Amino acid sequence: MRALRDPDQVMRLHRLGAAHATRLSFLRVLLRGLQEGGWQADRPLWEVDGKGVGRAVYRVQGQGQCYSLVCFAHDLPDDQRSDRVIAEAWDTTFALVDGEASAADLTRLEANVPLQEAGRVSDRELILSRANRSVRLWEHVVEALSQGAQPDPARLDEVGYLMRTTAVYGSGKFGAADHATLAGRSLMDGPFRAEMLTVWLIRAFVADLVDHIAAARNPTRAVRLNADSRNSLGIGNATGLGMAPFLVNHPLLLNAWITARETALAQVLSLSDASPEKVDIFASVTAEARAQIEGWIPSQPEQQQTQDLLRRDATRLTRHLAAFDWSQRNPWAALWHWAEDSLSIHGQEWLISLLLEPHGDVVDALAAQMGADEISPMRIDGQMSCGALLDHLRAGYGWALGPDYTRPDQCAQFWYVSQAKLEPRLGLRHEEPGAELEQPLDVGRDVAALAVRLENAPADRRVADFLQDHPAQRRAVRRVQMTRTAAYAELRDNLIGDDMTPIDMLRCKLAFFGATRFDPRSDRWVRITLFQGAPYPEALIPAEPLRESLRA
Image (cartoon, rainbow, N blue to C red; front, side, top):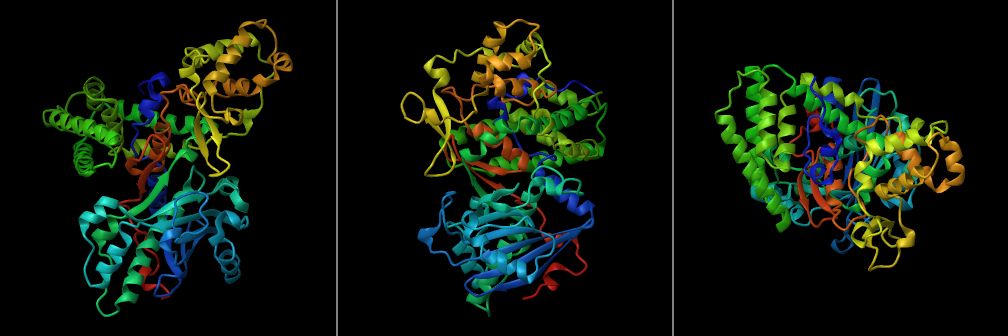
């Protein structure tokens, strides 16, 4: 297999911020696993009135497991609808239960889940979530269906979702089960599988809810969303700075994700030939992806410039493929080498998603390697010498040693948690108060300070003894040691410099989720869509068809 791309190339924010969803994205892995594992789905409970208020349960079962999404729908006045974490009311609230949801569970959850952070759930719950209706689209769809017509496809395409989640909480929050609960379980033991399952089931609930309200509004004329309309709708999400620190705080998990993707790319580029079947798949997905690029118009001028650049690259790729010799040896590598010389970073990262698509037989197994042990490496190796630690620091953190962090432009920003909003925020160090509340996300500056201390320490001195004199360096020492065998663990840029744009961090993580339709509203928050075009639960082929096994 050919060598993986250099981390100094891959882990730069401007390239990570050009990432696209791939076969290894978590929602794709989940959907494949559900199908391959023979999972079944049904809706055992539907108690919703004509105004869309009530509760429902969606259930999936397979491989000896059962998960139930308990849904609560509310009649929320428009003036109370907010995407903020500090909101106190939502159109819909949800909990993913580990197993069957009993009548007692429903009573308990109904008293807590609509409160979200103000309530508490138990260790039988895996995920807590909520979502709001799209003000731009919801009423249009309900009214069209109630009059016996399908909604305007152009308006569906413009928005892409009927509801957007404002949080999908897991991993022990508010009393829910820790992620370790899912360890060893087929399909679910992987990054964000429970979260993706929750969002997928929320999508089914939303489609059913809009049908139900339309039918209640006009029982004699109403129709359901047809297949094309349903498939065109995903679940939206508005994500801001709250997501960005994750990539810094989970370096070994980030390394696992990037390593899997880079290994997949290297394996595809190492293939000696391209079968006609693979070429046909590649041509099909490329044409489909180009159509999506041509049809997507972001709302912000800056993003439109990026989209124009990607459109130009898509045109160049199409022209190149028209005369491309697929019979040559290592054709995939030849195509990639051309892209490195001819396409922008945005076009190159887009091409990666296309190159992986025909090669599930090569790529898909790598999804099992995208988790990470984040506990064992936390112990500092005190027996290591200061000289060895400094050697590794210089080899892996050259990017951190370049900036002069005393210059105002190199320490212009600071991360903190807003007391009012309860979310991570960025402050301007030289213009705003609050730098004393700075969160420890300045990895480059920390490592650079460690390097200075190590250069003045005897090379044969033990790290344990060094830290007795310099306890403030423990975090940086742990970081450097933790990444000795994790080449892709660090974002190789100054995260407090004036040119750092957090939207790149958001896009990197969201691409691994499987997000599409990236629509940055600023350099600090973005709207995206999940599961657009994906199958619904009834595609799992339950023992009885989903819509015939429902309790109306």
